[in-house]
Length: 118
Image 1 (cartoon, rainbow, N blue to C red):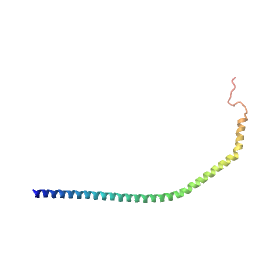
Image 2: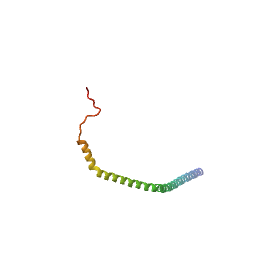
Image 3: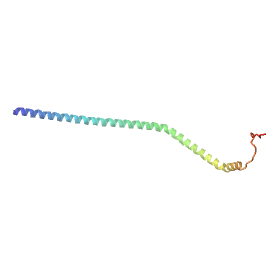
Image 4: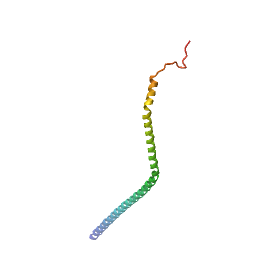
C-alpha cells in the first residue's frame, strides 16, 4: 500500500507541475499578446503621426496661397468700408437737409387719379 500511496503522490505532484507549466504558458501567452498589442498600437500611432504630418504639409502648401488671398480680400473689404464711411460723413449733412426739406415742405395738391363725383 505504501507504494500505491507513493505512486499516487507522484501522480499528484506531476499533475500539479503540469498545471503550473500550463498556467505559466498561459501567462507567457497573455504577456506576448499584450506586448504585440502595444507594438501594434505604437505602429498605428506612428503611422497616424506620419499621415497627419503629411496632411499638414499639404494643407500648408494649399493654404499658403489661400492665406494671401484672404489677407487681400480683408484689405479690400477694409478699404471699401472706409470709403463708405468717408462718403457717409461727407454726404450726411446734404442728405439730412434734403430729407428734412422733403418732409417739412408739404405742397398740397390733388392726386391725378382723383375724380370729382358729379
